[in-house]
Length: 233
Image (tube, rainbow, N blue to C red; front, top):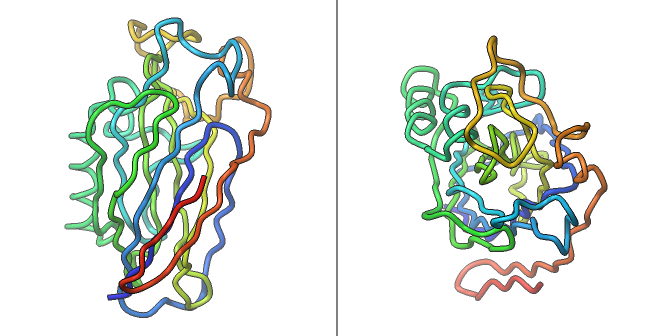
């Protein structure tokens, strides 16, 4: 098994591009995933709940190109809906397991423990990839909100037959399309019929203020084997 350390940045503004490889990467690879959350009055003035911003425990998996956890224009699965509305990950983990058993499109699940505040960082999450399961997707609820979430989808760890030493991905806020409401509130009625998953960029949602780009300010140093891996921020 190849051991790598990779830092993923999940920040609220920015976008990531997914580059698909035609050449498979060899064997298996192990990564460490770190999430840096950026949701505060310092980074997003006047776009933070009065009682403070939080995120539900991040949940995700490694998978093939045949699996999509979420994307713009897609209807939210029941699992994604539950995470976006309540932060509950049980149904989504069940959906991932079913994909693994019947469609062979997912492999290993990972999950953080406990709700975190808007400027926390979560580290030490182990991500395992193989030649067939070389992508990573993850999601966490924005708390409080009707059905808003942050996440990355289809991040590719394989570059033309070579495992990447590190990768950085950023995310915009997303609307699952399953509950009404445009404010930081969880007590809203269900959207009937449900809508599509969309990126939150338009008024009257207060998150439309997130439509400016914020750049990551970090430096990542990676060493293999028994060496210590450092993340310098």
